[in-house]
Length: 379
Image 1 (cartoon, rainbow, N blue to C red):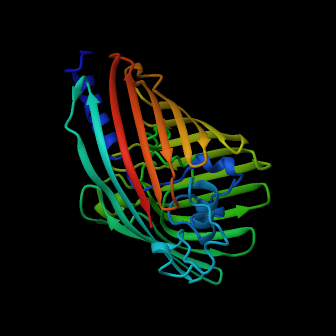
Image 2 (image 1 turned 120 degrees about the horizontal axis):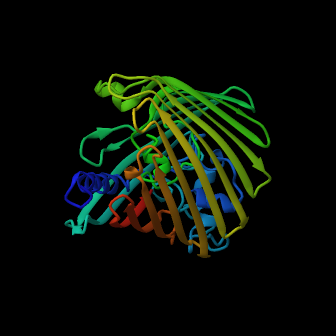
Image 3 (image 1 turned 60 degrees about the vertical axis):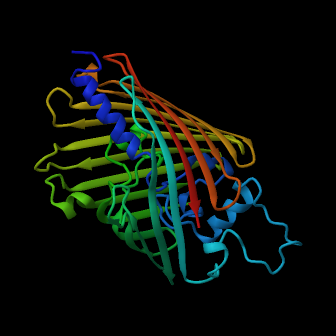
């Protein structure tokens, strides 16, 4: 059957709902800010993979370079608290312990298989983030509310900067792979098992130079599977090599290998990403991925993702992201997605996201649509 009521229609409905419900999990990274000529995530974040708590410099940059009305007037603000700091300066920026509070109320509208589902008003997450730097060591962790209820710590790790070029960290983190789009439901993330709750337990080695960054990690597998003992935990090896062509262009090669588990086949994904920012108001990222797995009838997957962002005015970004998911041996699994977005950054702690998704399931020619309105408060 190919109609909305058949197996493919049911799959599409489940897919749309599950993707939509996870589309506003805690923020990852904003690759659009590549246009500000910061090729490395550590310029603003504690994590070498990007996302999570901002460093004091990253907070200052978010005010001075990102927000529409946040740029300070030194004469008018002499002696005043810096609004970009935690709780508007309640804790000094020079303290070794840095904190952040991530709050994300959202409204979600879904039309799946021609049916409009009830609107949902959700508190997607409420997370406390902390980083403590002492000498060459950094301890990092998050603690908060899981979207479906209950407690979760998405990341917790300890890192050591061995030298200017060598770093090591161990704990729970998301493997470094390709572009860490802020939209966790992007096909290049979700379909490769790189969603917001897909962190692994492992050890990561980082090697950096002026123009290159190599990140290699190994571990026993997905953290949630290890904790729940759900039979899907498998040894995981990841590698990401980034080369910077000056401050405007970046080329990235990635690999992610997962071994056999009781409930999931062995798989290997390889990807190439290219980011280009010819001007301070324009950024485009393109990523191509191929995944192979020991699964009869669907042993190879191809994913193409692009995200292009334009800053129409300071702190006002328009975003478009065409995406394509295809299984050559199973044409019925093909998905074509278009995402249109508007991102507003009026002040340092405020981010308003409006995103419209259009998923086309090629085999049945059916369309699923989602509208996400989300307020991100980062205190």
